[in-house]
Length: 141
Image 1 (cartoon, helix red, strand yellow):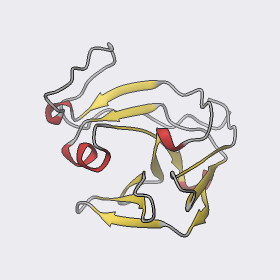
Image 2 (cartoon, rainbow, N blue to C red; image 1 turned 180 degrees about the horizontal axis):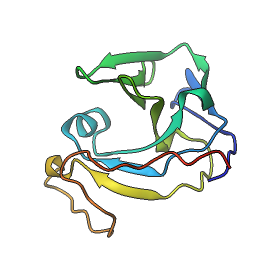
Image 3 (cartoon, one colour; image 1 turned 180 degrees about the vertical axis):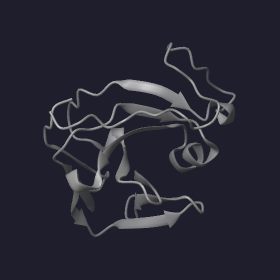
Image 4 (cartoon, rainbow, N blue to C red; image 1 turned 120 degrees about the vertical axis):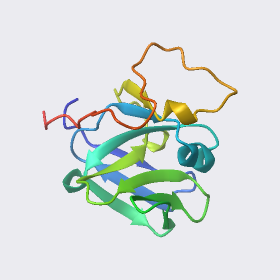
């Protein structure tokens, strides 16, 4: 994907962000934490920290969900927004929070061992029982 500017935010607008570099293809995470925080599974893209900036963060709250990561959400409207692993050079972004058309495609499913029993995964994308798929962020175009 080319280095197009993307913007996005929460439902109420208290959190807005901008990405000026490439976005990673969408990873579909079925882990228990993602399912509980979103109500289903999380569809997330990602951007490098250097390409990401908050343009409004009045509602942004962080929840430390494990020893390895934290989750960003809007404290005003409750929108799930970000997932940030400790020590990584990128932030995962809930794909549904991006404004307008993105040009993104889905790459894979992860943590499928934890998926809900009320749905099936039959789209033909690669699946990992745990979270081990390397889906890199493309280099700037």
